[in-house]
Image (cartoon, rainbow, N blue to C red; front, side, top):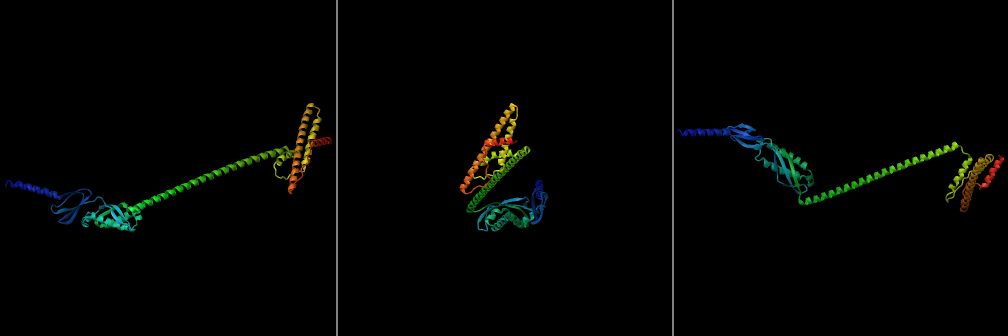
Length: 370
């Protein structure tokens, strides 16, 4: 009896420990435990300390409430243009209802994988290869919508579906590489042509601006030159009018300008003023009067000055006579050439050649008449 009692106490204590262990349940964070009582769903244990009825309540499943990632192996899919491509996908999902995920489907991971494969084939089958390669965002949205709608009744939320790779057949891949190389070459040629075009445009613009600047510079130079010439002409004109020159000076200037006009071999029409002879006569008279005035002076120094003036006047008269003789000869030659060609130039007759002696004689006569 003494031996049985301690054994009984030990058994009772062991049973109490086991019962306490069965009645206390600690659930970690981001996990839920589904509890059944006598084979029927009773409640869901949330994170923390929970108490169960020993030997009556039992935990059916432990559900992870965190977002999970599932990477599916590459799947062969046929496009609408009958090309087989290999597509590798990644699925992100999370359990939002642990009870439905436990009782609505036996294995939700396998169900999600199969649903993803079938949905992917349906989506890719409606697209050709080019759209399948360039429409990943559209495929992802379509897959996410279909999977989320189907898995919602299982207590599962599909957050995102990503396509990692789409591998076309090797022959198609080679053709695509050739096409991409040709496209890159075409773009390079277009860029080169555009660059050359822009370069030509810039060069033309530069030449245009340079030509405009040169033309503007020439215009300004001509304007300044014309203004300078106009100012010089006005100055000379004002000086002449202020000096009030006589017809004799103008006639002498005309005789000096005639040799320059006569330069050249072309036929010329001479316009000789009728007042030229009179002006020359007046010039001779003026020179003679000057000589008379000098001769009447009693001072020897004045006589010497008068002699010098008279010599200068004689030289001027001789030069004027020589110029008149040269003009007369050129007029004769021009008339002879015109007569030989049958086209006689029209104009006034040139003055007769005047010798220096006649000019001096005229001067002396005018002095005596004075």
